[in-house]
Image (cartoon, rainbow, N blue to C red; front, side, top):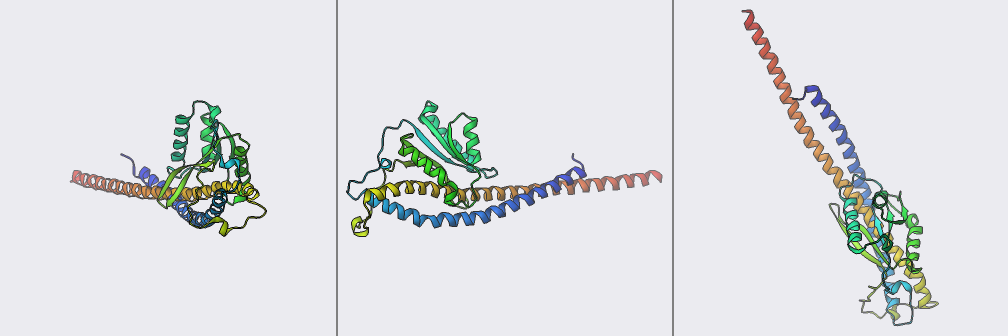
Length: 288
């Protein structure tokens, strides 16, 4: 049985760990609130640019763009969003399992796919397994601005325009609530799902200057980049929520362990006192 000193040492060390996890939980809760607001604030812009692009693409004019045309898929790019740090529950592992499973199911050669990694965890995972990573970015802010990933998004979109890749698929965690995040796989390019479901005639809403083709040439890359940025904001909210939940669980486990150790300590202390009393009584009886 462990000595009183050993049990007391474990209680003290667990209490210190609990203080750390509790502080990390509070920090993550604060970051999650800000990240959730950022993700929600971006939605109106994303919806509006999608509406404009959809109207132009379905206007019946001769406006065309490589991003709107599907072609034979010879090489697929996977845009994978993970975090730079761990201690976030299943946030990273669930994404990486989905990516690894997709690659194994759809490809037989590394020449058929590439990975664009956001986050140190995803980058290291791919490199350790020989998965080709052609671009990466680490150290993204907890509250990212578009400028933080502008170069990466524009380079990624340009890969498709230049026909270096034939398909772009993104993997990220979609924020549902503070306790729920969903692994999301979405095909970003080509943009073949721009269906106009509105009942209003686009030409009655917009006047295009200089012409629809030139506007499409500018807006389509911006739209694709906005989809990537929106996924990053969504992923950041999910990351903070997952880390907050993981640290809350760790704090609860620490509390349970402290309670168990305290019970052991009290029992051991009581046994030690009882033993001392027994020895005193036995010694006194021996002297009579």
